Image (cartoon, rainbow, N blue to C red):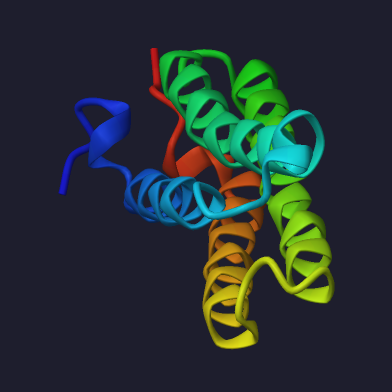
Length: 125
């Protein structure tokens, strides 16, 4: 399948779905976590999608494409940390957090594969 836009990327779809699951799960976090855990997990999960969008627009330039994918990779690891905190603080059930953690493991694998083989994604001139 030819990639026309960022929403065609399977990794984008998975990252968007995971970010939405985090959005709904974090609505139940306590008010006192609004400016720390809730904001951090939401920001980092959405940032994966934003960086993928930017990477898709930079596919003409291999180095810029890889740099944005690297940013997406860093951001994709961050929700895993916040999921651990949410679980340990009993804000999120272990099963739900584990599923989300695994979703980000898959997203990370996909991003690393793209970084390792950028020629499959970069637009040739």
